[in-house]
Image (cartoon, rainbow, N blue to C red):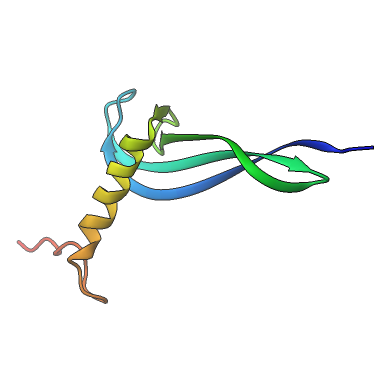
Length: 96
C-alpha cells in the first residue's frame, strides 16, 4: 500500500504599505508565498506549485502576483530598511 498526497505551506515574505486596488485605502499588505508539495508516506518530497499574492489588511482583498513582481516587492521592502541603523526610529515624530 502506498500513501501519497499533497500538503500546502504558507510563507509570509514581507509586510508592505500599499494602496489597495479594491478599497483604495493606503494600508499594510502581507506578501505571501503559497507552496504545494507532493508527499509520499506523509513526507513532503518536492514542490508541485508555487503561487504569490498580497492581501490587504484593511478589507481582506487578495491579489495574485507573478514571481518577478513578488521579488521586486521583497527587494523594495528590504531596501527601505537597509539604510536604518539598529535602534533608531524609522520615522521622525511630528513636532509643532
